[in-house]
Amino acid sequence: MNVTFYGAAEQVTGSMHLLTLKSGYKILIDCGLDYENRNDFEMNNKNFPFLPSEIDTMVLTHSHIDHSGNIPNLIKQGFTGQIICTEPTKVLSRNLLLDSIKVQAIEGQKRKGKKFSKKFSKKNHDVPTLYNKVHVDATDEAMFCIKFNTPFKINDEVTLELTEAGHILGAASVKFTITEGQETKTIGFTGDLGNYNSKLVKDPNPLQGIDYLVTESTYGGRLHSNITNPEELLLDYIKNTCEKFGGKLVIPAFSVGRTQSILFTLKQLYIKGLIAPNVKIFTDSPLAIKTTKLYEEYHDFMNDEAAEFSKQYGDLFNFPQLYVLDNNKESEMASLIPEPAVIVSAAGMVEGGRIQEHIRNHISDAFSTILIAGYCSEGTFGHELLMGKPTVKINNREKQVYAKIARTDVFSAHPDQAGLMKYLESVNYQSLKKIFLVHGDVSSLNKFKEKINLPSVVIPKYEESFDL
Image 1 (tube, one colour):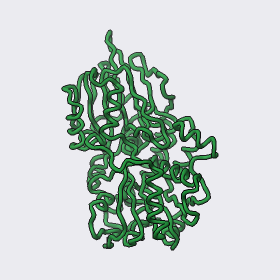
Image 2: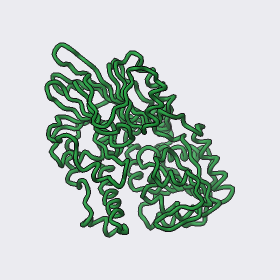
Image 3: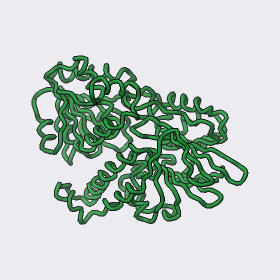
Image 4: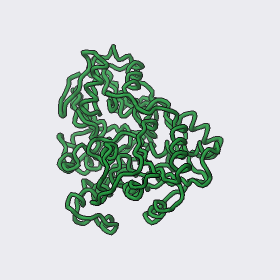
């Protein structure tokens, strides 16, 4: 068999890997959108370096858009096979893909130099997107759900098995057992791994009995900073921003995964009576609201802490001081109220979404804090904030930065270098024939390769193929 790397090779986004058997049978693992250069977004994602009609089967590790976001385009261009995934991944993907159409329209409008309007978002007449709702519906219909830890036979040559990857609800690692003639080989794809001791989802379940491994390396070159107890960290910011000064604690967070971890932690603080009664908590992201409801439905995918908490208190997230903002008007009102408050809003890297309005309203308030809960890639507005500039431009207006800008990894959905090494040790990495490092920037990949320090480690380039 042969593996070719068509995405997340020497970069983070656009995950897409192709297994080709000697018989010609082709399996695509993930089909994500490439966001490395937003100015070249359409060029990077519109066409595929292979014929979609020639792909027989696809496996989706999880719903995040850099892994799922180009599947409707794959179908649009001729793919007709099944998409194998877990049930939560199927449900979450639909919400994310529909949201992606809107994001593509907004970004396309910006590239044309137009101001985004709500009216435009409904019509989308003059800004093309990679796909539309018809293709998202077709994606949903093509998804075939299987359970964790249950071997599934694709054909006489291939059996696959999904195991918990952690990361987000329903995220999977995948192990392929492939028999060609008299020879059987196994290859594993981690997908995106979760951080150990996550607030909601289970720890990664290591792939066992594999010959080859394709592993994510997002934080392969660093250790997480500010690691502490999540409850202690949030409580400290609430006390020193909201309670002490009456300011706002604004937390940009990804709609799927991180927002839910933060809300769960806030509810734990509320249950213990540690949040002052006058501090309101707002969650402000339509996609995050939909996702939070799904987390409530899939208790079997939660870790023991979350499952026990839900059993004891009825649900994971809702409490009297939490207010869900359903529309733009409510969002604007919450941002402008004079009382102290915590605002959790998408997007995580402060790229688009309602979060930019909240930051615009509080960036010049010396009593407020903007707490960025995770990694911000270079070129994003979140990264610009973390650089410590005295002024930033929001909606083409310069704003003075007086608010405190802080960052924490405590809610990270990825393991750091130590966590990745822990995972590799659990799969007996020294005995593997090849370890392919993907889903990381070049610096992280090289540092992780040095850390592993084995001749079997390879950093594949885009479109590079390997016979296994």
